[in-house]
Length: 289
Length: 323
Image (tube, rainbow over all chains, first blue to last red; front, side, top):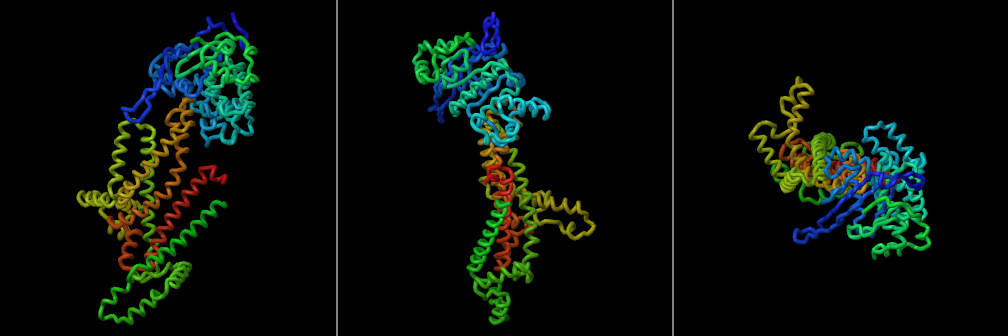
């Protein structure tokens, strides 16, 4: 049994092993300087999430809801306080440094602000080739593969020697995507990939991601406050509020029957011109909560 | 090229302004080199006046300044009244020693400060960080004079290192002493004054390197590099260090300037035959042109060091090259 979607044949959920599993994942921060004035802030609170191979899950929520903390936990920039994080069945949080090193290449993150997430002193080619160089791949091969990756995201060869700040916002986002894809990860976490871009560029990035998904059969975890853009790309959407996933479902069901107040607010914020819920194709649930 | 010419022009103007100020201030100081002669009954007032007139000390300030300027252009840099010879060879031979001491101490301080500062910035939670912080605080709180006297005491009590001077008489006088022996002797003499100067500069540099390193390590692109699995050492050296370079390059000139001013005290304590000692003696003897020349040479070093910083910044930062 299989479903045809975006031109990719995806195995049915029950046959597909989960790529990523989060169980009761929590992350707290201490805020305030003096010990007596310190407050515990729960950025993530008992997150349950299962993501299957070759699917796209969008985590949508308002600013400060814990979306970026989740992204940082997934790429091991933050260590959760409790819970389980399994990738391909491996309990990632119990791994040592060397074990994590092997997993890191399989999960890549596209940062929220590509302008600041790339070293301004390096060229686009150097930025994209660096992850290969540290894998002990020869410089020549790294450059060739980086050039190919940049061409894949529509950055022409003539401009690969330029520094990140010489590119436009959309081009920088493409370079960031190329860098994340160069190691052929299994899971690509996209943290607000459309923020700071105009509508046309946002659409171009959505098209690019859809094309990459088709050609590379990749799994995306899209983090965004923009439900409209998320709906164009995702199979499943989860709404996060105060560190908790409060509602989830397929794109069509969530847009047509939002039952939580937070979700209704997000749906209401979409201009009708941009998204008609009736046009959203009913897709299989790619993630469970 | 335009940037270089502009900076050179700035430097020349600064040097000219410093020469005017130095001349005016030295001239304002009461008395001159021949005041001691007036106290001797066998020398008549007329003789003293004639000698003063011969060396141009009775002229007005602008005349004196123009006379000195002419002498600079001729290559004499005025006349040392105490040595009774052109000032340039005297000042220049001492300046080379000061430059050797200052440059060695600056280099040593930077070589220690860079890894220490980066270490403290990269591993703020380690116990070694606390140790470095305490050491820095102690060094910052210790006046250079006390540090130099302690080192001098160590040298005198133990006899491991020479307590002063630049070369032993044996090494200086003997033609048989090889270049290697002379270099070894110079290194032994250089050790304590260099250590004292470097210890004075080190805490300031470590604090600056730590601040710049911390800021660079908190940059989003460094976080991104870590998320991409780039090893921390590479992140530190390839990403954070170049990002932290600009404020540190600017500090190179300042550190050399600090070193020049600190060396005045250290040279006097360790009897290092440098510009500081020469200037000190010249001030005591009211050797007019020698004071001005020494002050201007020290200013020239500072301006040169800042020019070097600017050129390094120009080479390292494309934003400055773009204007």
